Image (cartoon, rainbow, N blue to C red; front, side, top):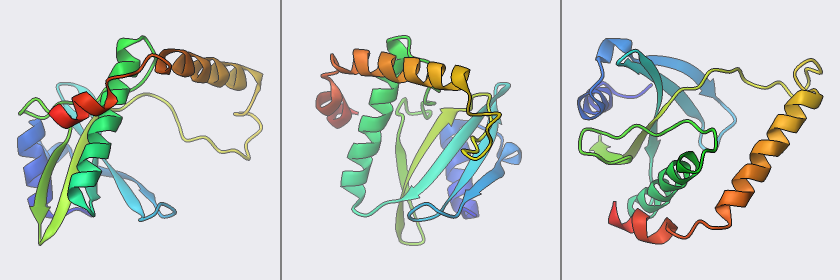
Length: 155
């Protein structure tokens, strides 16, 4: 669980009520393992990610590039969850807590459920068609993506 200091920092910078903060899911298999947190703001649910980062500058750059790419997909009508800007207008914020650097991002939560690859009722022809269509659409618009480095360094 994140510290109270990190939680208060995030609530202040993203403008959400600290009482809406929840732990939704613990991914024990990640490297390193991560907890998924949510909060509510203006009637919408958001996922917030706290990542300890080493080295911080490199991880911040990569995270900004990822958020920029998600925005690009959204701007090109690809169905993705849109990142939430912090009060300072940025998609990625950072802070230190107990001597550790943290990168914080938030993104709108979408409806759905976790896929179980062993559940044949969820892996069907319609799912594969839609998945393939989305991947094809992403590939099509990604071929023209050129702003990665410039925008990520400017943010």
